[in-house]
Image (cartoon, rainbow, N blue to C red; front, side, top):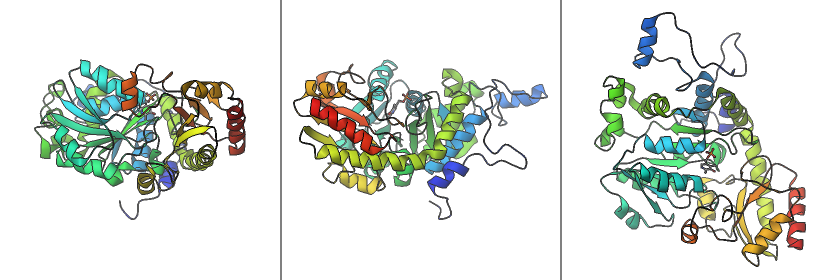
Length: 428
Ligand SMILES: *Cc1c(COP(=O)(O)O)cnc(C)c1O
């Protein structure tokens, strides 16, 4: 990282869009499907990727690109793009370098939606994913790499089990096998951790969570560090290093250098799969980024107080929150997220599954929602909600106990949140 690079709080406000003389201070919403050109020749060059410019919002839109550029700067990456959802971001990030017959490796503790995408839907496309325990040894992991393995995937702080990924260790292993490390940084956000600084190559986000922060827009993003040398492992990544017949035989790495990955994801996958974020939502994401660092500070402060309260409560069986000194992941949290992990934690109420459900039904301020990581304190019972497609065996493999409650601490006054939890625990 350059010594002159501004801090993430500054980039959140000033990054991406730098207006010129007389231009709007806030990046405008380009609510337009198409863009005007004077000659047929110019338009033709755009379609040949001979010239850069906007032509159709299914592929690219200026509002999206300005927002993505800001997020990329915050992550310490080089290139970014927005997608319609976090699901689309993770799919695009992996599918951009994997095709039928390929294999990749992912942590089994990742978000349930991503687990289904990798383990079920992508399997139907002929792409196989091996899921690993994050506590796996280097030697065991080495043995899982095959000649057709194309990437390693993890989440900085996993949803819902809040396990911290040992980024540096996994980046080294991935690189030893000639593949990139892709990481979903949704829960940590670039305010709390920038995986690229630890060797990660590609970062993804569900912007739906803390980045939007107010529960108003579903969206995703991909940021490329520009660091992974695709041509050094050209045989593994033919999609980037050999001619694309759908662009008259152009080769992404030759033509676009370190922008090859994002250019292919935009001009090929976005063209064909059309999972663009709307410019209106991209504007909300940009606004969310502006206040992200101030909000994350409160999410983490409130989170620590609530985790300590729960940890000391006689009716609570266990609490997982990496910021707690007693937590299994505390050392990794201190290394990668010293300012705080996020506002999400997990816990179980003594008496098991039914007691946890009884407790949730007594809450008044804290609401039951299929959402997480925004301004409102909310909770969810993964075994009966998000993870209900998973068998008990798969649940346990993903580290999701049947009594596990995922609690996401919002921006309300923390005394009110604690008082609500306390009265519900008393009644349950
Ligand atoms: C929510 C979430 C996703 C999926 O994002 P959507 O925007 O809901 O599609 C992916 N990864 C993580 C870590 C998430 O929390």
